[in-house]
Structures are given as C-alpha cells and as structure tokens.
Length: 475
Ligand code: FAD
Ligand code: 2HG
Ligand code: ZN
View 1 (cartoon, rainbow, N blue to C red):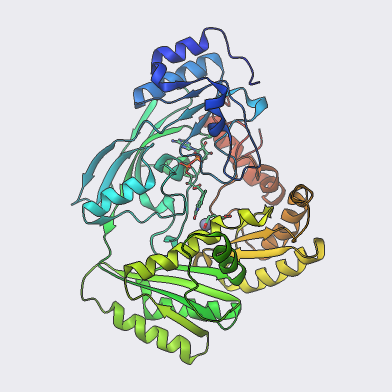
View 2: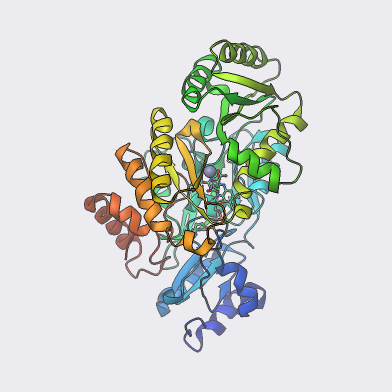
C-alpha cells in the first residue's frame, strides 16, 4: 500500500481540483504507476489532474507547504521510468492530461501556443490544418503529451532536419516548486536577455518544475515528399549513403533510419499489415525521407539522381521508391513495428545510445561480439536514428532462455555495451533521458564535477527536493 498522506491533505487537494481532478482508487491508479517497459510498478496514494495553471500552482504550493513530493506526468510513455513514483517516494502524481487547450496559432510568426497536456498528434494535426508543420514525430505520438516531450527533450524521426525538442521550443510557462508561475511564453526567435531558463527546463524530466504551457516553432508544411526503402550492401555503406544524401539533397533530408533484418522478421511475424517491400533478404536496410516546402521543387529530380548514384556505387543492392502516400505509409509501418514487435520475442535488454555517426558500424560490431561472449545466443536488434548517430541497441533474449533469468542480466549487459559507447566518445542516453533507470549508470560515466554542477542547479531551483526526487540525478 502507498504511504499515508497527512489527514487533511487529500481533502485540501480535492478543494483545489474538485473530485473530477482526483483519483484515489488503487485499481484506477494502476495505469498511472505502471511504466511502458513493464519492468516496474510504482505507488502513489493519489493522482491529481488539474485543469488550469492556477490549479497546478495551488496544488504545488500545498505540496510544498506539506513537504510532499510531486511526480509530474504526461502520457506516461517515457522509457526510463521518470514519470512514476516509487514506493519510498511518498509522492503524488500531477498528471497534465486535462490541460489540453491549444491557446493560439500565429501563422505569420509561425508559432503555436499550447498547454502541456496536448497530445503530440493533436498538435501536429492542428498545425497541418493551418498549412504548417510541427515536425516532432515519434512512435508514441498518439499518446505522449507535449509537456512530457519537452520535459524529456524527445528526439524521434525528424531530428536530422529539425533538431530535437530543444530546438523547437520558443517559450515556456512553468510552475516552480514553491507554486509560483513563471510566464516565459515568449514567441521570439531572438531573446538574449540572460540565462536561457527554458533550456534548463527542457530535458529536466520533471525535476525543476511543472511545465504548464509552451510556445512551439512551426515550419512550412511539406508539399513534396520522397520516401525510399533501401537494402544495403553492408552496414558500413550506410555512412557514404548518408554523406551523399547530405551533399546531393542537403537540407531536404528529414529522416535516415536503420533497420536490421531481424527487425523486419519480427515485424512480419508479429505486426499487422506489414509487407516486406523488397524481395530477397539483406542484413541491413535504410528508410529515408526527404521533403520540400514548395510544389514543383527540384527534389524529385535530385532524389532520383541520388538513388542512381547509390546503386552505381553499389552501396545499395535493391530498393523501392514510394510511388504514393499509401506506399510511403507502408514503409513507416515497418519502422513502427520494429519498435513494437520486440515484445512478443521475450525479454529485451535496451540501450539508447549515441556515438559519432562515423563510429556507428564500429560500435555495432564491437558490441555484437561483446554481448555474444556474455550471453551466447543473444539476439542483437540495433535500429533507429542512424542519421543522428543514435542507435537503439536492443537485445532480444536467446530463444528458449528463461525470460526472468535473462532480464536479471540487464545491468551486466548495460555495462559491457556502455563501456564501448564511452570508449567511442558517445552517450548512454541519446533521446530517452535518465529517469530512474539510468541514474547510477550516468553517475558512473559522467565526471563528478558534471554531476555536482547538476546537483547545484537542482538545489537552487528546488531546495526542498520535492520535484521528482531521485530521478535524473542522485539525491
Ligand atoms: P511521460 O512519460 O509522462 O513523462 C516523461 C518525463 O517527463 C517524466 O520524467 C515526467 O516526470 C516528466 N514530465 C511529464 N510531463 C511533464 C510536465 N508537464 N512538466 C514537467 N515534467 C513533466 N522518445 C524519443 O525521444 N524518441 C522516439 O522516437 C520515441 N519513440 C517512442 C516509441 C514508443 C512506442 C514509445 C512507447 C515511446 C517512445 N519514446 C520516444 C519515449 C516517449 O514517448 C517520449 O519520451 C515522450 O516524450 C514522453 O512523453 P509523455 O507525455 O509520455 O511523458
Ligand atoms: C524508437 O525510435 C523509440 O522507436 C523506441 O525511441 C526505442 O524500443 C526502443 O527502445
Ligand atoms: Zn528512438
């Protein structure tokens, strides 16, 4: 059972958010404390769902006065257990889902002001309906919320062109750990008036304050799009293929994703409506997309010339260029299923790593040898945003091995893989963040000075340590 809260605390909360904004029934609380990977189930006595910034402010002030910890939560799709409280935390969840108003869209300024609980897909659709693009895109976009995206500085499939969430935010509204409201909702592309506080909140994973609204950058919506599914001659050939794309189609390149054969096999076996676009089997594939913001651009010509060149150089052995939106969607369906279809294959030990793009083949080869030595029969499933140097180096259990016995090796395997990442001057978390699950690993690899500086930032924003304690940095 969750730790008991002070007697009158729950009724004071209810006075702020009314019974519509409170969940105290444990069976109803369960989905809010269960994280995506299914590895952990947390505990809380209460999920609060405020409907306005004023309500968030009042709830946080009440928590501060009573020294009760807070875990901010959006769509709860995070992959590092940052959005759920653990038993020892005695924390409440502030879930932002009811704050889902789009406050404004300014087509001339190319900005949109949204509340933290807006679902990412709703934001994308609203931008598209106004002939604009909000380019953040990831598999969980139908469920994750912009506040969660901002707090975790999400990446996704368009980073190569538009940057990660950090590059897409112009302003924020935040409730501080004492319940004050910082109105930083500036819609400016230039503002050089001191420390850029919004950048501290972006990627802070709920440890510095509760994000309640944001000003987002919009872009021209794509008018022409080219999507290709290519079978590589070798993993190494992904590098000249990317390099050539950047020099021949330049800025128009929006996605460059790596898919291994095992990912296609899992998707064909467990996914719905997945079709292998290329006859024959190859070890590695690239799904790439380019787009232009105007009609009748040079893009189709350039793309065709580029593809010819990749065949001439024999970097690509076979490939399909999507002829219409439906075909392009069918390529992206494979990519989506590559993520989802690891689950039915049993235990999967995950890594979300980045190395310099030039070191990707070395990383994958070295890691494959190391993990096979550790657990013979382990099945590497490296995929993802190779154009950003970001690989989800996920490892499915050997066929027939006991799932729990395999998952018990999680930390040993992480250490072997992360040692290689650090040796190649990479990062142990490219886009998913640190949350709860990578705190110790981060401390192991970062310098004590870097950890100390982060702790000083945390202390100066949240001296009481009530904002998502124990997440991101050690207490
Ligand atoms: P939550 O999971 O609810 O929270 C995430 C963190 O942010 C927690 O620490 C929480 O405390 C904090 N937080 C949430 N809301 C607020 C707020 N309003 N104020 C302050 N702190 C807050 N991630 C990627 O980067 N790239 C991908 O390609 C990608 N693909 C995914 C695909 C699938 C199928 C799934 C399940 C997940 C994927 N993710 C990906 C991970 C996840 O979707 C992102 O991290 C997303 O940004 C989390 O948003 P959320 O609303 O679910 O946040
Ligand atoms: C993706 O790119 C996500 O699909 C999820 O970041 C990665 O399953 C994973 O580890
Ligand atoms: Zn990803």
